[in-house]
Length: 107
Image 1 (cartoon, rainbow, N blue to C red):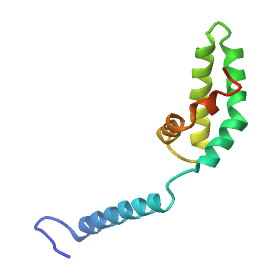
Image 2: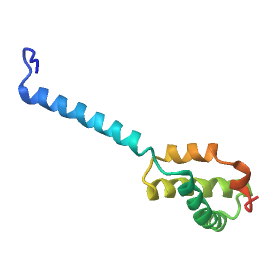
Image 3: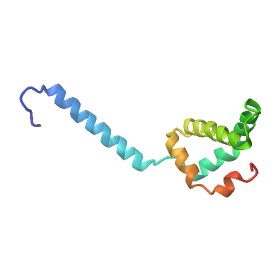
Image 4: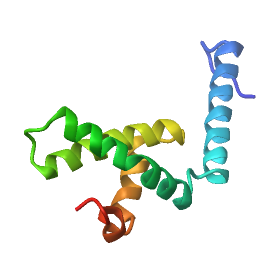
């Protein structure tokens, strides 16, 4: 270990610990990249209709597109928590999923 003037060994040790944690976090992400496509589809098929119904009842004056936008936002938040991933990961999945299959039955 190389020490520079003015740095205590505890500061250097803390820095190495943080670097080690960062590396282990990166390793975990590469080993477990996130929920599978199958998990997202299961969540969509099991829950989206419930959020659409809630949005329709809560905001009856919104147009159908507004109900779908609200339901999608609620589903994204719910799914991210349930599958323990970032909401951005869920939104990315939504953008890359088969759009025709997503809206089948909800148009």
